[in-house]
Length: 468
Image 1 (cartoon, one colour):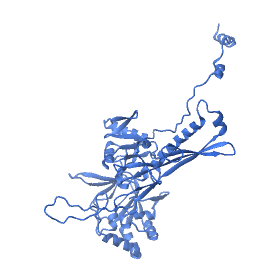
Image 2 (tube, helix red, strand yellow; image 1 turned 90 degrees about the vertical axis):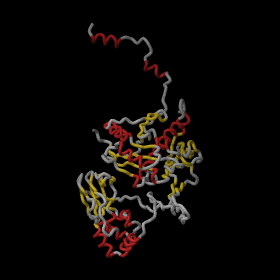
Image 3 (cartoon, helix red, strand yellow; image 1 turned 120 degrees about the horizontal axis):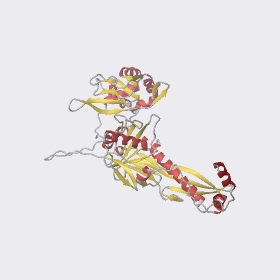
Image 4 (cartoon, helix red, strand yellow; image 1 turned 45 degrees about the vertical axis):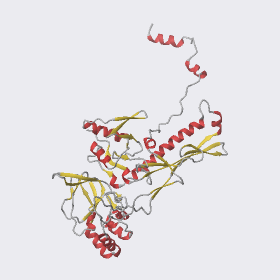
């Protein structure tokens, strides 16, 4: 018998038992609860120490600090033309607190745009410093002489930085280091002569520069705080200095932010389709998960209180070779005492692993809640997919010291809100409308505060797409 005849015989054979498809109509299926791909590990929410606050506001009192501004200059790009935002010139020490918009606009117009290729010298050590450089795009190394006479990298500057600002105040300034480009750079140059020409016609600008030149140097510590006069190691009966600790007159206050949504469930669904699992509970559970994801995103990226936007400029560093190597991680850790954790995008963690592998290093891991977490110098590196990755395939790595006792980073919340299901998270019944739809208001209150500037550091512009 041929193969075709065997198939026809099988198809025409009468069925001898109940088929599986029909039997399923009488069977009870086993179901999972609704799954959600958006849920992540949310290590930031789990790692931050949360502080309950009253009145919805947390005030951070600090010692008086003479440093103001964020130390970065903002630019506007139109095609290949780059212009500095006039008000941002107030970041320069010579123009700090200067508010004549008309004069600042004229100074901004007098800035000359220059392009530099990789490896070019912008300014040389010992040369006359008669220009201010505003770095619109790219990376610049500050090269000095090391203790043994060889070249040493004193620092790396990136987008928004400025250098040469001493040219506006010193009578005969010279470059104390060499500025050399690492990548192609777009720089705006403000010559001293241009500023002097504007000052000849503007009494307010001339008075501003004279005041800055004559202003006595403030007695501060290396953090910029007003110094506390002390005496130590003396003998006999010398005059002991008198002192006091001054506070900031207008300390920063953090108000709780809010994330909300109105969840709607038809009463027919809530009444009839609650077995084997409660529809209302599952709808609320998934909504709360989405709310927590947004909460962590805001703690990282919000312009008011997000970690990436609240890191001080002197706590932001640039990788020396682009990819995040062990030297860069060491530099990041060295900027603060007692770093408790690092946060990085999973692709940035992979880039760290590639750099360590290239150098023959194997990072240690620790067990955290059943998860193996890589560490560097004993500091865990937690994944956080809320840290953005740019189109140029760069990202950031965040380092934090946490807790009120250690003057670190803390999370803020308000427990005891009405209809609370978790601390600072509530689900409030809003009634039933004319279409028989039940409404619930789901709300989360939260924020984050940086108690002292060195509690938070960021390694910026790390390359995550380099393969070697």
